[in-house]
Length: 348
Ligand SMILES: [Zn+2]
Ligand SMILES: [Zn+2]
Image (cartoon, rainbow, N blue to C red):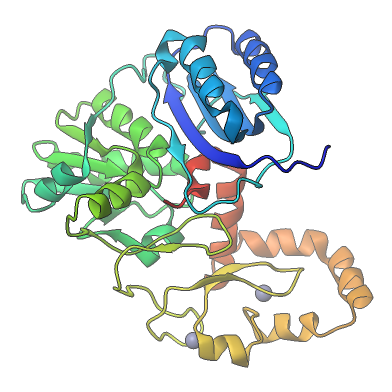
């Protein structure tokens, strides 16, 4: 790894299109990107490509040309470029072939991503949201919905996307005559979800182009009122970008209005939860008294405790009784299964 001083652009993109030989596709693309000193994570599957990368600024035009010409389906592909990013998010190029770019649990061979819902741009989203014949459906996880969502959007209350798909169909079964608008953070999940609803016989299916990130960017650019209220959760150090001043969530410890996510300071926990300033003081950034106690132990002793607990913790983590634990499971499954919606890292 060479120390690099060239400025980099952080870019994400995804595209669903049939790739016949993902391994060959991967090897060819890898060679081209490597030559351009592209870093980052890219997943390739029979269903398409999902990438979060950084490109040295001087190579940006060459990169674009390479990508556009690499496959006809990639010509003119929309690139999300992070604005407030130092481009230092990656140091190597990792390109992997996976069964899916977004794990969906669908094993129906007749399901196709060739027919997806219609894209909606920001101004169209605002028009649809006023229409009482339209239902907005949030295809993200609970902790994301909790701090921000489109006005009156339905939450699909499950921990994983694969569980959400059949659940959404069930929840919407009496609404087949309505317009269904699906959305997620960067568009990759709701695009697949829109195809799934069409597959299940829904007719008027739409999705927000580029997800919340692109909606917020365009609404701001065009001076439109934001119909997305609260915060857009993103996986960067801020754990969320404020879209409007509305605080729609509560501190998980005291119940006061609050929408600041944090990770428990105890290294043996790292639970993702919402904590207000007062509770942060009181619990020293931890999620519970038990974690405060452990956090204060000498580092060696903390390590020893964790080592002895590994299995016990896993079992405890499966329990949904502990409201805070539940969030941790969501966080973990999100990272593992959908490590995939990498546009999540972006915050424009
Ligand atoms: Zn609190
Ligand atoms: Zn904790």
